[in-house]
Length: 139
Image (cartoon, rainbow, N blue to C red; front, side, top):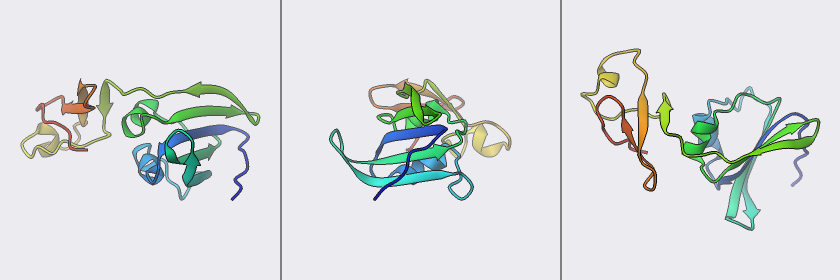
């Protein structure tokens, strides 16, 4: 299979195999309207298998969210057909409107219009807790 290079945009590489569509969902990128190429279950020397997402005409990608859903991914910024920058997403300290609190008594569940805010409680366990009720996020 051959997928041509992109001229301007981003390449998200080393996405865990089989999770590219989930990553697109978390990044709020609609595959029906975006110019993109998904390569799923490609061979990888480092991970065995990986997914690759190429997005033409770069959209704003929230690297904090990417650090949450695909921490080992790498992001290449492409301009004029050349990679001009590489980024490694980090596990974010805060997430807003990415995950939802499961506590039925939480104010974010009972009151409409309140942002879903979570903070990183334990980085080694990737544990996030709700800013309002301190409920652990179920991922």
